[in-house]
Image (cartoon, rainbow, N blue to C red; front, side, top):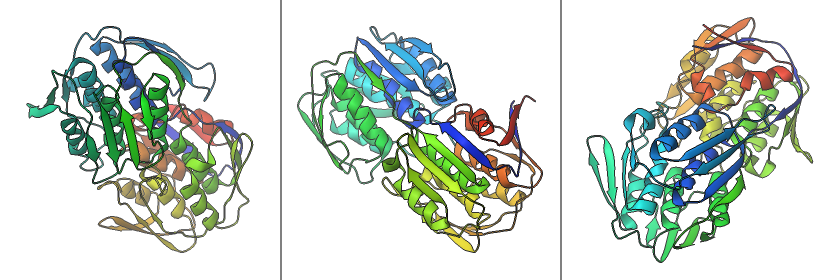
Length: 426
């Protein structure tokens, strides 16, 4: 099992290429199930979650042709061909490894009229029920039931257009509703749709395949069903969470780093907070440049919200930043329960953090101390690596397979801009 060693104190300088978005790619690859023709993707990140999806797609009968990127952050190429569906069952052994694999349910149902998919797994960050997903499929005319840990869905006469009103702007449920509705008979209207950039990316891919979708980027998405979709080529958008993580890394360690491919409009909430802490952030013609000259950081409160608010997937990283800021900050997590799992490990490194319900109170300290720690989930794990960048001595982050779920060659990207970091086998 790999672990990452970080020796703190190095300033960062240079450029980091931003990989394709993991959160978009794991949903995008499920789209291939909607067509008999070949679907091609570029800028696909080489992360563990993507490879779990490859295993699942192969089980379902999809031909997967993966070409890794020749360099760091350039993105791999992917060809998917679901000419024939060999199985409509997504087994527990695969789905339990990664929550987004549950998204094959809608495309399988829309294409074949039947699907049997295990309830999902993923990070242990609190209850994340799939009821909104199932309510959307039920509205489209499917019959769904839970049988021995599997969702069994049937629509023998096909899906039909419907009004889908989400009580919460769920990203996964919005993606699921869109993928199912594109082949439904008639018109589907989704209200309170999620606004995250990954939704737009999936919508653009579906449109390239012949889907009729309007309203992307708004809370009201209208889909007019078509009889069939065709093949297409689609580039995965840059990963805003990876870009935000490296922006926070630069703010913590100091220095100047340009994030190549990062998009300012996808990170406005983080950029606003970083500027309040005293960090200089500006857009460039290649991405975003982040600079801190060594001046003390100021404490800033943060509350996670749905897009365009501050993303929950950057909450742990921002908490790591606040551990060394002057003053006291409060970080409120409104999206997921139990997502302060990084706190005990940061405290082991000398951080002053107290939690109460959905709020963490962070009082900045002069310095953190290196220590052996362990990743409990993807975002918590990367926050510990960031803490190691500024801690005195050596930090050893164990169970980094969690981090590998969503970051492509993280230690290599950081070492190229000056971080003293390496991966070791145990």
